[in-house]
Length: 497
Image 1: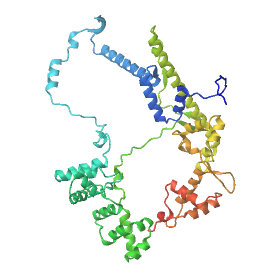
Image 2: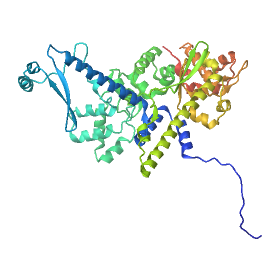
Image 3: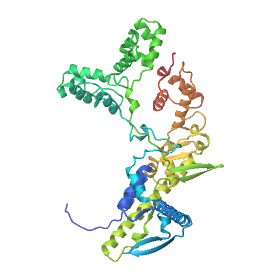
Image 4: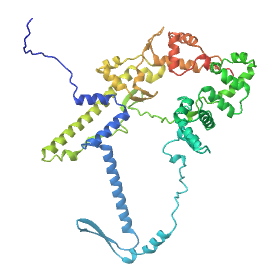
């Protein structure tokens, strides 16, 4: 078959991802904090952008300063019975103000004597009035002490030789956040340092006496034993239970421990109470994880029988186009092109942010429409909802709704929730409509909270109780939801004493 070249016209549609469209899509999936950082960076790069809030604050501050100057001027004019006038003059282009009046009144204070006494006198103490207290030393710290800093301080307070101090600092550098020394093994660490393993063992034993108790342990049993000795409970029973029956202690199988150790059950109970007071993770009190505070993107307020969705603009810059640069294009083509380019970029950013806010409001209003019973009655009345339902309701694509609901939060009369929270799979009921999976989790938590501590509900028992309420789910589903809620199994929840 012969080959030939020819031209053809073909009409087709294609989505072109312009930079502006890419920016709008990127803004949709940003969280509130990420959006604030992006706007701050854009304001540093684009001089056309101004923060209306900063401008208002600056005008208010200038007004206050002018008011203060006027007040000082009035006080100066009204001081004493001396007639004083202010005359302004300009010297070398700089405005000057000259005070004329009675020279004796102006020179009432012996300034030379005052300055001599001030320079020769002792320094003034940092004193505050009786109504204010000085902050404590802890309040002046920039950050709390970490576990490594706390242990290093104790190590430096010891009288160990320099060689052992270096070994100790190397050991401290390998202690994890829970306070355990697990990796690398001590023999491997000694080989890397070229030190005697016996000497490294002695340094580790010294570190294990530091605060918090149990730090530097290589296993849970060793951690418990360190605390047991420090508490003066190093009798045979507690030590044997820690060394040989940690698994039974976790399962609260005290009968098996009593049979194996040939001890009365009451003695096992008393020893278990002592061991339960020990901390299995001694380093967690020095955790450096900072709390993350959630700021809602929208508010849903209830006024009477109606709900209103209100955007939360607090803390976000209120962008506007600077009039100074718009009027300063000049006649230069280069400067005009630069200003116009920055002007277009600023306008696109402002429009994209406004479109982002409108889209979030639309999604929140649609969720309010579908989940009205939740806002009225609580989480037990949450309905199954998928992204497609909201997308069809507001006329957008599912991917857009997914981006909008990512890392966005809403403040409701029932509390603060992520927008993703309202999308749940459905659980069939024997009577009535399907129930959301979050509502089933809430029901499981209520059953566990109301159970008798000495006779907790098993997963099968929870299945039976849910079935009486019209919720038919399998036992493995209950186990999965229970683990997601952080609820232990019935054997571990059981309170024996």
